[in-house]
Length: 151
Image (cartoon, rainbow, N blue to C red; front, side, top):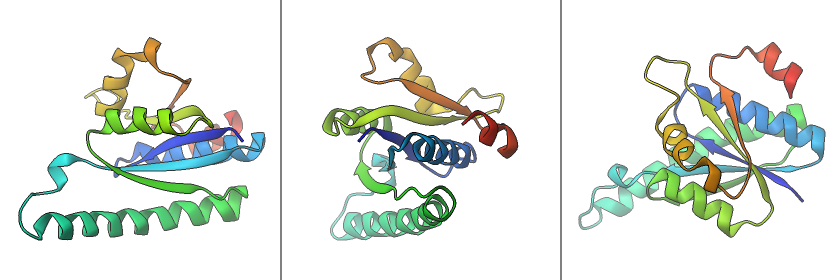
């Protein structure tokens, strides 16, 4: 089964990327893999501290994922899979694509702000020609109606 890989983070544009991935998966009988990445700077190292911080991050991710997964199941009939990885985001995205041969499309939300599309999008665009799958960039400012119409 072909899968859409979508990155879940705390950015506002993430919601549109998640919606788009779920709607496309529903319309094409595909799956959705939701990738959450705990960046290295989110975990301080020390006796017991790193484990506690990691657990807190995973709990926060699981809580956010429940909201998105419920919407995907209830509204799109898609049962997503959650993957949590730790490390530098672009490295972890590429590793997930490499490890899951069913991933056919990477879906990323792009910020509509003046600071550019966001750090993950900016970094991946530098090596776009080397990526092992197509990338869909979903504008963070796109309306829900327009998103539904094009997906």
